[in-house]
Length: 170
Image 1 (tube, rainbow, N blue to C red):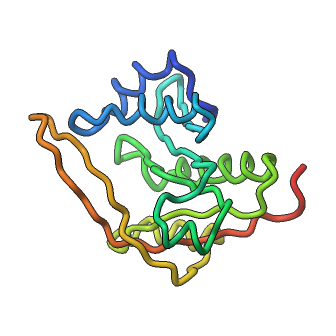
Image 2: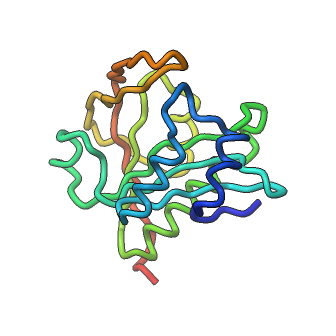
């Protein structure tokens, strides 16, 4: 498996193998943020097929509750492995490790991530990898357009986890 920063020519393959829900154009939006220097959009590849993605948001979580408590802490966001039968095979762990390495090399000493209260499977993974509870709770607010173009507003109850990255940046 190869994990690398997304390139523009990857976008069609991402949509073909890991389709954005509804009309969200998720991959293009993440790529644009990367082009603006606001994030790094990581893609995991297996035999030239994308099997997982995540982004590092260099300015941190957008929720004010998190920004206030953890300024300048990059956030690992939008971790996903597709198709579902590839989950629990180490792809998510590999993406997280690659993001941590990149954050460390960029001079950061910690990485944070938001965890939906209902996502018990992700909680097990993050805690196993050394992320710790912070007692920082917030609503992750976002919207999406479904296949019919109808806008849906979402507010998921979340908590913010932090991991101290080892050693000094190289």
